[in-house]
Length: 90
Image 1 (cartoon, helix red, strand yellow):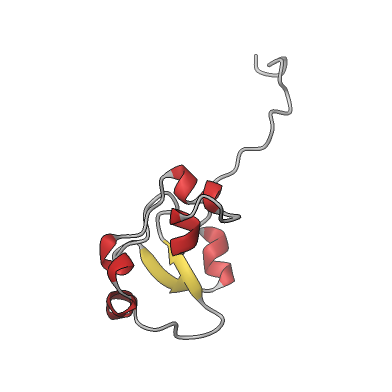
Image 2 (tube, rainbow, N blue to C red; image 1 turned 120 degrees about the vertical axis):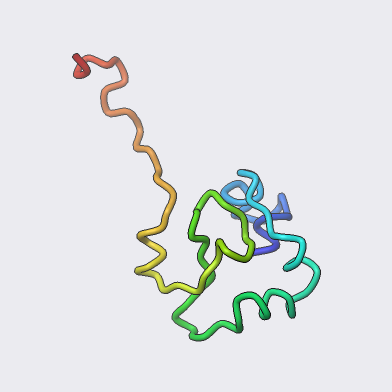
């Protein structure tokens, strides 16, 4: 989480820090603050999810979620325009 938001050399930086996604100062300050806010990871089947996929890693926007829950909460990716000339838009 911290690396992909703060380290431009991280493989996923463009999708996180490069889009302006940040980690709150409270969590950057200590792992104890993070655990106090979210608790320890309750299961190996759960990972950290942002409820607002365009929001930051901060209390109130993060939950532990499984893959099925996370797949519902993804950013929308636009497909390349199948009609680049707009011929079907009349």
